[in-house]
Image (tube, rainbow, N blue to C red; front, side, top):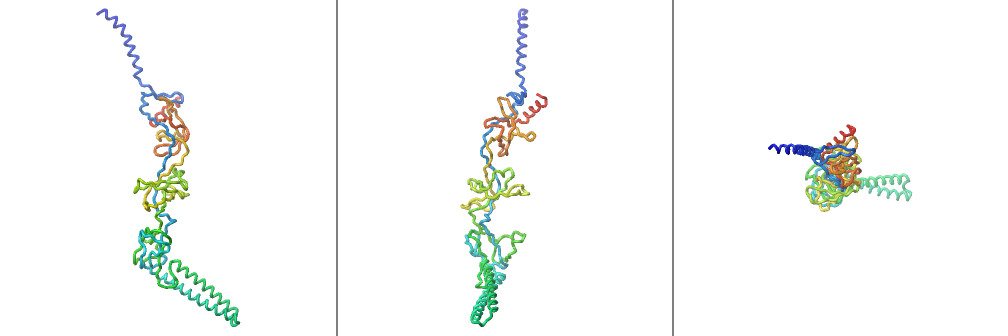
Length: 384
């Protein structure tokens, strides 16, 4: 037993040395800054907080806009009553195809009867003035009438002719004829199309000034005639999305009624002012509707390809603002990161367009950017 004691004493330094050599290996490496690089090695406490993703080449992104469908005003007529009176007959209904000048309804109107009577009276005065002029001219040619009588007859004829033309055109303007005085005003279609709205009933009293009423049930047109195979799309566009739209730009229209179908439209008019209440710009587009699946007042979404210069897309979480400049942290090697200034564009679908500063395939930090920035600033403030 006494002989074994020196052996044990000789092994103690080796055991102590093994124990001291394992202690540094158990300690996790700390993050540090070396020049422009931030080094966060795997296994360090900060490494688990970092997330890294690659930079993608700029893909064509799509802007989604909200809007609604309305009738094309260039192909739409809203018909009101030109004279006051009760409705005696309705000749057209919703969904019916009508031709231009086709009768939609009949209105019994004393005011229209007065216009007919004026036309008949003017026609009679014209015929009398015509006969008088002929008789005076014959007398003048035979020396039986003075020149002043011929001049007066010619003036009367001209006035009668003008009044006859005026009153006849007034009656004809509303679809009537000066040959009869029936006090029935025909309400006619001003263009070819389809009756899409009717707000008139038999016996209803209509007035030409009802369009000035504040109540919707009174100011609505009696008939709405349009071509439903072409519709307008009214879009609300925010300021940041406005550069993507130009007159003539092709857009894809989607509706909840037909989610599997795309309807092709085209932007036509872009407003020159913002709506002060919504802070959006009104844009008008048109869409073909030959199938007549789309309906007026439908809510739709319009997909517009974004017009962007070539660049890259990075996650919006990778970009941070310092002062007036945008930065990202780029992975320079395993556990090594560089802060790099970028030229950032608009954000879309959780990504930011980057035009300068990074290249496709490079890897940027998406989680833990503030941690790295804190380490970087701590080094700068300490003079390291």
